[in-house]
Amino acid sequence: MGEPKAGYTAHVRSLDELLERDRRREEDGFPRKIRVGRMIKPGKGDSKVVVVPTTVEEKLVHDPNFRPPEEGDESLGGTGEGEEGEVIGETPVREAGEAGEGGAGQGEGGAHEVESSAYDLGRILTEKFELPNLKEKGKKRSLTRYTYDLTDRHRGFGQLLDKKATLRRILETNLALGRIPDPQAVDPNELLISPEDRVYRILSREKDYESQALVFFLRDYSGSMAGKATELVCTQHVLIYSWLLFQYDRQVETRFILHDTEAKEVKDFYTYYNSRVAGGTRVAAAYRLVNEMVEKESLAKDYNIYVFHGTDGDDWDTDGREVLPEIEKALTYASRVGVTVAEHAYGSSGNTEVERYLKKSGLLEKKPELLRLDTMGEDAEEPRIIEGIKKLIS
Image 1 (tube, rainbow, N blue to C red):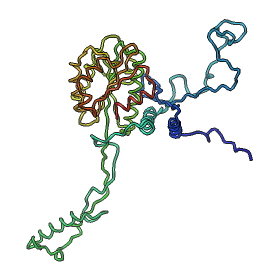
Image 2: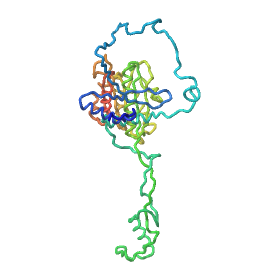
Image 3: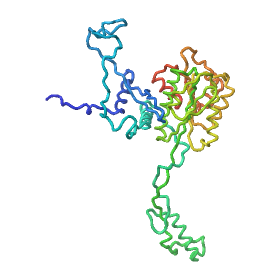
Image 4: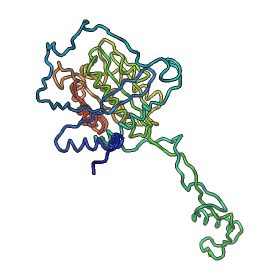
C-alpha cells in the first residue's frame, strides 16, 4: 500500500506545538527559529499594537554547480530591448468592482483582534520563554465579573441551613416568650421552634474582585534617540505590554509619556513611536510628570502601577540631583520601575549618565524588588531583548 495522501491542512500545527518543537531544538544545541519580536506599527487610529511571531528558514541549494551572484556580475539580467527601470506594462491589482462592496473607504469594517494578538503573545512569553507570573495584589471590585456563593440569608426556607444563625433566632424567640427563666441552664427540649426561626443561606451573585494594572511607558525622544535606540525601546515596551496584558487578563491600561528637556503625555502608541524632536535630555521631567498624574488622579489606590523607561542614557542632570528624588517617590507606589538603557555603539559601555547616578545612589541594591536596570547595545537582537525583559520584571 502506498503512503496515504493528506491535504495541507492536515499538516498544520498550532503555535504552541511549533514553540515546543523550537524549545527542543534549543535543548539539542541548535538556535531557536521562531521569533516574536516583529512589530507591525499601528496606524493613527489604533491604540493597541500587533506583534506577529515569525520564522526564517535557511535556503537549501542542491545544485553543486550553483554559484551565488557577485557584485558587478551583469550576466544575471535579462536580454532584450529597453533600459533599466523602464516601465513595459501596467496591470491593476484588482479589477474594478471585483473585491468588496463600495469604493475606497466604504463598507463595514471587521474586527482585527489587535488586543487578542498581544494577549496571545503575552501567554507565549510567559509559558514558552519562562517569564515570571505575577502575584495578585491590589484587587478592585469588578463591574463585569461575578462569582456565585451561598452568601445571602433567608428565613423559613432556602438551600443550606445556617445552624448558628438559626439557634440565635430560636433563643431570641424563646426569651421573648419567657420560656428561658435561667439563661445559665437552658434545656433544649423545652424550646419552641418556629418555622420562621430557621435561617437558610441561598445562592447569590456577587461581584468579583480582580487585579488591574496601569503601565506608564516613558521614552526619551531627544535627537540622540533617533534610529536603532528607539526601535529597541519600543519593541521591548510592546513585549512588556503583551506580558502584562496576559498576566492581568486584559485588565491593563496604558499611558505614554515622551520627554526631552520637558515631558508630555501622548494619546497612543503610534504617536509614542513616531514622535521625533531634536534637543537635550532631562530625565527628571518624565518621572515628575508621572508622580503628578498618580497623585492628582489618585491612581495608586486602584491600580498596580508599573513604570518602564527607555533611554540612551544621556541626561543633563549628570549627578541625578533632580531625577533621583522623583524615582524614590515613584518607588513608594509602583509595583516595578524598570529602566532600559540602549547604548550607542560609539559610546563606552556602562558609562552613561543614567547608569552612573543610578548605581551610585544605591537604590538598585536597597530596593531590588522595585527598581531594575538593564543595559544593552542599541543593535540587540530579539533573544537579548527577551533576556532584558526577564531582568526588568522577574
